[in-house]
Image (cartoon, rainbow, N blue to C red; front, side, top):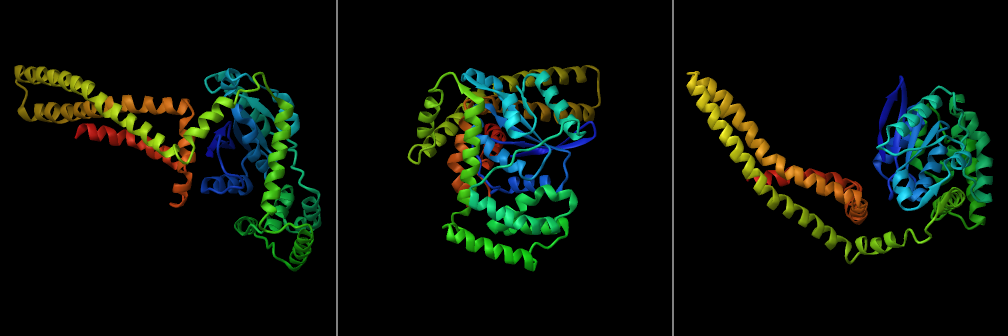
Length: 387
C-alpha cells in the first residue's frame, strides 16, 4: 500500500507499506501508482515497510520492487510484536541477501525511526550504495530475457538501463498497460521490428516448453515465492515451532465462507450497539453540565446589563451550538474509535478486508476500502445518537 511521498533533508523518498494480505503484480490502482512513481517519478529512495511477524509474505513484493529501482531501504517494523511471538530475524543477513540496507524499527521507539531516516538519507546521498539482488527465474525464462535484453538496451535511455530486465519480462508477459506507460514516460517505442521478431522466437520457445500466456505469470510468481521462502529460512528463527497454529485456527473461522461474514456483521453490530447505547449516558451528563454553565452565563450577562443581541450571539448562538456538538459527538466517538482500534490491534481488520475483497472488486476497488468506510461510521453513529 502506498503511504506517501516524503521529504527528509530535501530528499524525496517513497513509502510503501506491505500489509499481511495483498495481491502480487500490482493489481490495485494504488499499487500501480506506487509502481509508476518508482519507475518514472525518480524518487531519491524507496522505503518498503515490512511486518516482522509475517516476513515471508512481505518479501514477495520486495523482490518485485528491487527489479524496478536500485535505491531501496527495507524497514522491518513491529519487531516488538515479533519478539512476543518468539520470532528472531537476522537483519544483517537479510541485508546481505537482498543487497540493500535493512533497518529494524519499533514505531513507538524514536531511536529506531531516527536510524531509519539516517539510512534513507545516506542512500539518497549515495553514501550507502545499493546492489539489489535480482530474482533468478527458471532457466527457460532467463534465456528468454537474455534473448531480448540486447534489443531493449538499445532503446531505453542510459539512465534507465537498470530497468532492462524488468522491461524484457513485461514484454514477454505481454503486459500492455505497463508497456504503454513505459513508452509514454520515456518517449520510446517497444514494438519495433527487431523486438517483435525476438518476441515471436521467444513465444515459440516457450510453447515448446509448455509455457503460454495462461501459466507464464504463475511461473514467474512461483519463483518469487520460492525465493522469499528460501531467504526466510536463512534469516528467521522461530523459538516456538507452533507459533502460527493459533492464528491459522482463528483464520479458518474468521475468514471462512460460512462464518466469516456473519461474524463480521456480529462484531460491527455489537460495536454500534455499545457505541449508541453507551454514549447516551455521558451525552446526557455533558448536556446537563453545559446547560448549567449556560444558565450561569446568561445570569452573568443579565447582571452586567449586557445588550440582548450580544448574549444571544455569544451564549444562545456560539456557546450553545458548540456545546451541543460536543455533547452529541464526543461520547460516541470516544467509544467507537477505541473499540475499532482494539479490533485492529487484535488483527481482525485485515481479515475483514479479506472477507470483503471479492465484493468490493465488483465495485472496482479492494477490500481494504471497507476499513475506511467502517471508520467513517464513527461519525454516522454520532449523528444517530444526536437524532
